[in-house]
Length: 414
Image (cartoon, rainbow, N blue to C red):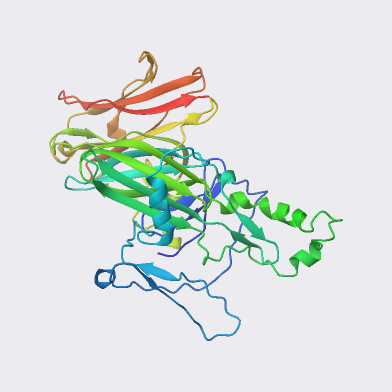
């Protein structure tokens, strides 16, 4: 699908989201709208779907020409037989470099944080894995062309899921701002640099380095600080490895992933996702539909609010923390359904001592007509917690005596 820049209003401000796959997308940090006004050029997007099943192995060259004078063409120069809608870099040169980095160990120059979990994905045993990756945008390599107002950056990501026996179970990859994509500030003319002063004349503070400094102030509007995607997995024990590269520096991390095999007649609980950002779900749905944005991505929505999972869960006491999880009860389809409750508590991660035990949450107010899935989101007060590591633990139970295991998510107060 086409890449779209989408301003997204949140509880505090707004950010940009960019997608080139049906279920994965990049997004920026929360942006101060009064300081940064990012825009992009208007253009036509033409595409076609090659028959990759009949392609020979390897990559195939691609050249695009147009007969209209003065038209600028931005087009990739190859497509590869191994590419899929989830794994755009499979078989490409960029993908091969990321694969090489994924297999390495050693020091990294880009810190990478990951939160991963699984939720029910309709009927059957397969579940939907949710992956959120975060990294500091200001450490990413980039440069500006002051004559054209174009940003040069190339941010690639590769994730691979391995089963306990070491077999590859799933992978995803994506690339933001490849060399052929028009990352240009709208309305930027070639005489802008002359208007503000030449590189040799910096008397106004805008020549050469001064103008580049002015452009760098909008880096936050173009560079991502997170990547999020979803894909299906069979129940099992896995390891997720992720590598991020800006073309020069890399960051990598590895986290465990458990996809539980739930009995269809049992009470089931999804992974617990910690979130620090949220949006009005209706507004988000309207913007997403208008932009044809990642149409296969299933947002985490509870009571009309969309929650965004946070990969970096080292929090300040004044931050807002929310827990999002789903209870799945096939008994809701029968009458009468047993009353379901969710139990939440905070535990000291070092001593396992109980820090805070919250009153049970009645799941009835979160039920959705015609669905056995109960999406619940609760704010977790952390303002009075001392510094240190904690675990949020969640359990679902009902009046008939059924209860799930405790599911946990770790965070720390700094």
